Image (tube, rainbow over all chains, first blue to last red; front, side):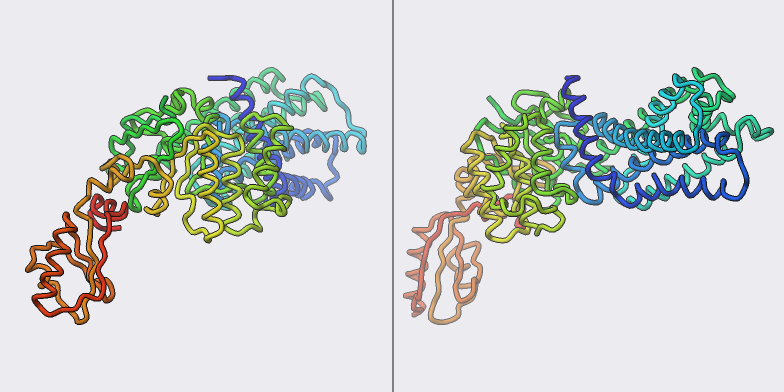
Length: 247
Length: 306
């Protein structure tokens, strides 16, 4: 494989996704507004310590924003009949999968960074471990952009079906990942959080901002990396299968 | 050198063999027509040749590069206008062309120069900054063609490029195909329009139920069906088919107020018809002979159900 051509094709797919899909209604609603509303619903009127919950909020923000573009792209392109043209360009399925993930990851990382900077300036929050913040932002955005792309991989040309299906997967995750109840306080439900990839991201943000992580940052980063690889490979396999079956 | 070489392509969807052992070779500089009825396997074949669909077996080489082994390199050599594919309606005409040109690795100055040139050629200069979603079908198809030819590909695939277009857009598309061929592109075009293929193509393959049933130049294919020569004749009074059957003519069809009599020997048929008209006191109002058409050859080869 010609690596230069492959990287170029990944970047070109990502550029197209950024130009077209960042402004779609469902991306704005599920990627930006939804996590804000969820957090405010939980936070307002409960006299909670914002510093304690801010890492969870950042985790939720990154989770929703990074995973919001992926589910839209492939079904949208199949419905609009642009997918066939895209596949006939100098791309491989791997370029399309990684390009879509890159677009989702950049979106998630940019939004979350803005929220973190804004929150830190307005609320005078701390940054205990800057070295944990970088993998949290980078690996977290890649993991959940990969999840978004994986969710879009089944052959369908109906974006609304995939958005519904992706929320069916995403919503339960926020309740078992230490977002609203810190991991250290989950008690007998603690076993559920280890199954959720979001747990490791939230824990990594806790390590970075408050220094009150449950797992070690290395374990969190390793888990996110492993889960990313699984999501990427699964998305590639499913889309490759679609190409063989003509769907 | 062969510009396109598809060898023993097979593709099944469940128990149905959509394409069964199809091989196509297109020489550099040719315009190659790929004809077939709806569902014959044209689009499935072209999708395998452009990397949109993975064949069950077989291989495809574009300008000598194996498409399955080196898809990125092979696709760099081709421009594709898919039957069911369109350009991005959320981008402007210019953005679509420039993004595609960038995809093929063209530098900025080259992209912009080529974009200006193509928009002018396709009559879309004044709409370059408009979103494609506001374009008519013909204009969208022109942008689709612009994207396919922006990098001056050595090989150009067009799947039913003129279907559903108005006369102006159709003419522009065909002129562009000729222009690209003149500029050095090898063209493979699928079409329903037999006369279009007859005018454009130097070689033709006909596919039927997933198998290639004939390949050759349009003239060669017509000659294979020399029995489709006909004499068109009209009389001053109605006649029945039995009249022609009595002369040993196997096929005669009414065409308005005329009869079309198919024959392998027009000279003999004309003499027989004139003699018969004299004997039966019929006045011949008009009589004309015709060479076989590609359409006739196609109808014969595909079982007569176009």
